[in-house]
Amino acid sequence: MVELALAELQDKRMLPDGREFWNRHPDEPTPSYKTVESLLSEFPLSSLTWIMGFDQFLMFKTWQKWEWLIATVRIAVLPRRGSNTPSNQTPEADLLREFKDRGADIKLIQGPQMDVSSSAVRARLAANQSIEKWVPSSVANYIQSESLYTSARSS
Image 1 (cartoon, rainbow, N blue to C red):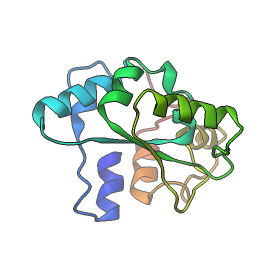
Image 2: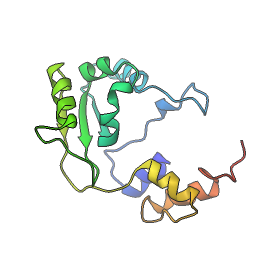
Image 3: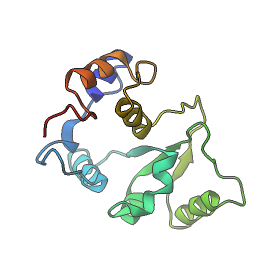
């Protein structure tokens, strides 16, 4: 699906990378630290930036080897419309300060915000609602043709 979405964007700087899918079972997640380790072994002189949504930033301490990740990669956090971006006196700001105190290089990225999450897309699909305005048409077509995220999908 990432390949389909990137093809529609037609931005030559963005290339899909399949390493999160190599050597794993379809129902097993690949921890992000393994992806970073693989990238660093292939590109040892590169500086990496991990891009994540604000919802994942708030859950980042639940990730495997999160302390190693904040010490190893730059982190760019994209706020989602309606999310509480940190002001000085919030738990989110405390988390941001804690990470920075541990030496993390974290940037909050300002720009157009979309109120779209993968969870919301799956919920719309489960409710038999359209996702055409939420994802590129090629991705919506692929999800429909493969019966992804629906009870019609065979196990």
